[in-house]
Image: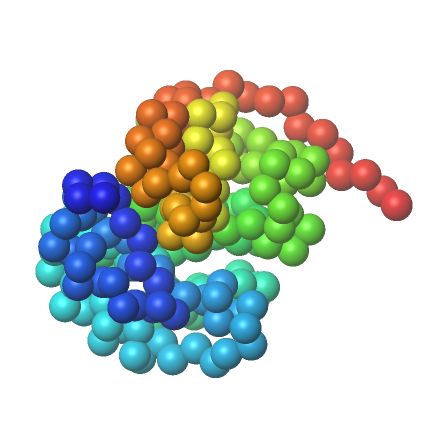
Length: 209
């Protein structure tokens, strides 16, 4: 796996030193999703301290703390507390207003998107409708598309959505299965790239129940 791109979560940080020795780049995940799923409390001061030394690496960046099902006001308050500037990337959750996403793309070099609420299932009908809306607005505001990272989005590799990067736990969780190997799985994912451009899509009205 030497020379690959790695993601290490604050919820399971044991490999962070190793991947900095062998990796091409490292994304530090704040662990909000894992802690939310397990019902654990977040300790953002500990996360700030953990990220501080690793962000000395020029190719390492971190996800700014977020609340998975929180509203835009909560997320913006956490942005104000982030101490490491552009070495961090904010998360736009798909249930939040798209105007917040546009503001984040104006203010930050990288922005992450997280599937949430009624858009929690990647590539579901609701998810596709919402992400079409988001990319439509992004492309209207930016002549050249900004760096958008899709959290838990490896299934989008090779799809029409122009994500600059995606992540998943696929290799970590499934490399031991029959006919799998870390190298083979990484080669397969790295050989599948997203589109470079976005063609405006007709927007569909939400179904009224």
